[in-house]
Image (cartoon, rainbow, N blue to C red; front, side, top):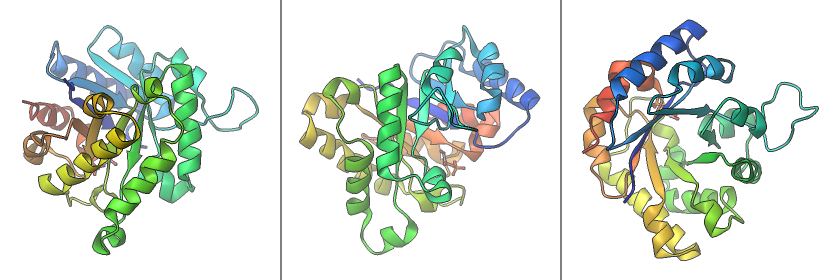
Amino acid sequence: MRIPLIAGNWKMNLTRAECVDLAKAVADGVGNATNYEAAVFPPSLYVDAVAGVLKGSKVAWGTQNMVAEGPGAFTGEICAPMLLDLGCTYVILGHSERRTLYGETDEIVNKKTKAALAAGLKPIVCVGELLAERQSGKTDEIIRKQFSGSLAGLSEAEFGKVVIAYEPVWAIGTGLTATPQQAEEVHAGLRKLIAERYNDTLSQTTRILYGGSVKPSNAAELLSQPNVDGALVGGASLKAADFLGIAAGVK
Ligand code: 13P
C-alpha cells in the first residue's frame, strides 16, 4: 500500500513571514489526515522558521537541494548534516531547474542521492523529459537514462527510501499538464524499471509522484491513476487553499 505524498516545492519564493504563515495554514488544513502525507520545501534560509511551526504537526519538511560533500569548505552550499539538524525528513534532488540552470548531471544527482540516503534523509529524485524530447518520441529513453544514472548503485534497502518524481519539463510552470494518461504511462514505465532492476515488491512499494502544473482542478484525475502516488507541486503550493485543494484530490 502506497500512501500518497503531496509535496509543495516553494522554490525561491516568499518572505520568511510568508513562509511561516503558509506553513501554519498548511498544518491546520492537513490536520490529522491519514489518507496522505504532506511535506513542504521552503527556501533553505527559511526552513528553520518553518520547522518551528510544523513541529508536532503531520506535515514534514525538507530542502530543495543539497550537496553530496561536507561539512567543510564549500562556500554557499548546504549539506545533509545541516538538513538533519533542522529536522528535515526529505530532500528534493535533481529538479529540472537544477539540471538545466545549474548544470546538474545524473552523476551529480546520484552522488547527492547516495549522500542523502547515507545521512538517513529520504530523497525525492526528479526525472523528466524536455518538450523536444517528447515530440521526437524520446521520452522513454530519457526517463530510462535519468533513472539509471541518477539512481545508480543503490542497494535494495537504500532504494526503498527513495521517492521518484516525474516532472515533464514542458509542464513545469507552464500551465500545461501531462494528461493523466501521459503521466500514467511514464509512471508505469518507471515501475517496470524498478522491477527489472530489483523486484516486484520494491516496484510496488516505491512512490512515484507527478509534478508539472498540478492544481486543484486537475489533481483528482491525476491522482486517481493507478501508478500516480502523489504530487510535487510548485506554483499552486504557494497558496494554502490550492495546496489543500490538491490534497483533497486524494481518494
Ligand atoms: P509547477 O507546479 O509550478 O508547474 O512546478 C512544478 C515543479 O517544478 C515542482 O517541483
